[in-house]
Length: 421
Image (cartoon, rainbow, N blue to C red; front, side, top):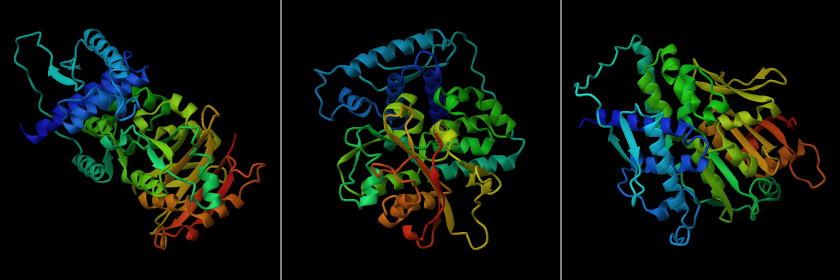
């Protein structure tokens, strides 16, 4: 089997999984969706031939690594429900699927197999159409290569065990800020961006709403939107199905974890996040509203937006309150960038959410340094209203970072104001 043929088969399997997840049999159950996505990723990403119950309980349902599976049947119960939902899908809505997905009893590794053909006619494979615009295909190939170089696998992102961070030894203003996000009595989710979906929007010029991203209804429109943008539909589908996040997100997490090990952080991938999580938990949302549509849930409270400059393939911030754009790459500013930070209540009003966006990886790294630097955070706090308990009020800020020095004290706070209600 050629490598190219293998890739096509893998993409067909991923498309099948996405169709099943999008169906009414699964799209209303976050736990069953998480379970199916994890199991199929283990097969498609890691070529797993066997997946054990204890692994699933730990990775998907947050059970301790050595929990007693005889006393806790959560995996078996949900696997049984998932098998029934799969049977329903392939017998009704997916009756026309040429490939079937099953989870055999006694082993949680999904199996993909061809459905028995209903006709004896030999299969006819249509040749791939000749692209009308080869320049755009070259651009697409380049973008795919870039996505492979600057993104990390979802195998890392789907770790369910919480990472650890400590703020007890941090300087006072840094500790004050992070204590509003990392609380021992409250779950904190670090939501990594969906780089593949961001790339898809950049290439097609089609912006996704949070609603269609969450329920995955945007997948139905991929062929038509790709065709309108002059892209190959199969290649566009291949991009959308990748489960990747930018390296800058991983770098941010790494710097956050350098402080120690006492506060739990749940590492989440944007595609697997939910409104329920955003109502109940504290969260750190990384990316722009294209690569992480969950940021759209808070746009009404913010004046800073991020725009994509397609000709130059860069993001830049716009302050809609002052109607001012902050474009990078001007003469003498090649090594400078911007990042925005915002602290807001979560959707349920039960905790706080930190939003972080930047012009690129270096800007996000600068933001990570800024948020753990006493001088920088004290300067930021001094620009905000005083509160009774001294805590940071809801706010948004835009910071200009000088990439050559990389020192937080060299960063310039160009916008800082209380966030809207």
